[in-house]
Length: 339
Ligand code: TYM
Image (cartoon, rainbow, N blue to C red; front, side):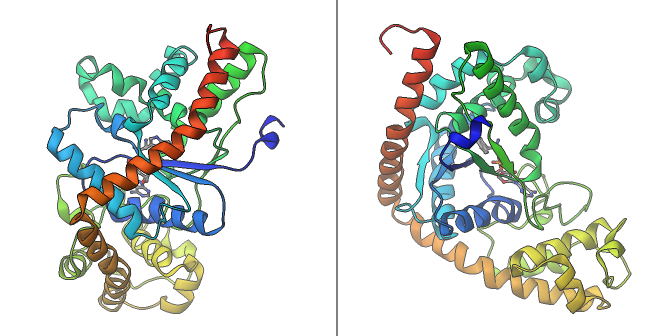
């Protein structure tokens, strides 16, 4: 297999578009820290070029970029051991994206459900960038020859497209250059749902703030949101099967399991049979215990914007050192003179 030749390297990204929430934490950040702690080369990116596929207020984008960086660090990411930077500081992402715009087919892009969801009925008014978004995402990953990408379930289709792009480039140029990257979608919280509707994903764009727990929420707010979370009248089941057709119960149990670092089975073995009036306070305590120190640390880090900017600039320099030779080799393979 071509990919076996590539050294393990993890890449993932998060958009700085405000409201970093529990879904991002459990589905992404917490798992990034675990990967780093296993000693695998890890590259994490605040994807500001992705964020501007829909209009962003410039001051708000700068704030969200720094706040997300603070969120990474407060969650336990060590910018010395991992590489942490913002996308626009490494021009190779946009350059590789152009190459992939020429590899990806219109038909592939038209199938992307996230574009359809985001553009809605107004596809004609969506930016060209929003349509091309998944090719930039493939560039983010492949410009480092990343072999593994930890993400939540909503990114699965984009990662399949990344594989298609790598395969087509390798095939079209008769090389085994790009790895066929593996999505890593694991654990109890790869799809954290809204606290108001267990059939909808927890999302930063939900108009109701009660639908999500933000990493910037204080302890009282976290506890209140959990207390008010939608549930059903039954007590918790004893088995995983008993969560079927109970989306809200399943979501809260998944959140509990992910926060506690336990399996869903273990949580139900312990708490099965309890009513929500007992389970919710236990979940609120667990959430506050985990998240309050993160939000406090984020607020502390945000007091020194210059230090955050230094961390991002240093990360960008390290990222560029990996990306530049891979882009140059890509150009060389394609016949670009001077590469
Ligand atoms: P973004 O910014 O929407 O989300 C960041 C990460 O959080 C995960 N996530 C969730 N996980 C569980 N439950 C949820 N409710 C939930 N909501 C979000 C996402 O799956 C993601 O892992 N296109 C990406 C950013 C990106 C990227 C990349 C990711 C750009 N380039 C390259 C990986 C590799 C996005 O918009 O994620």
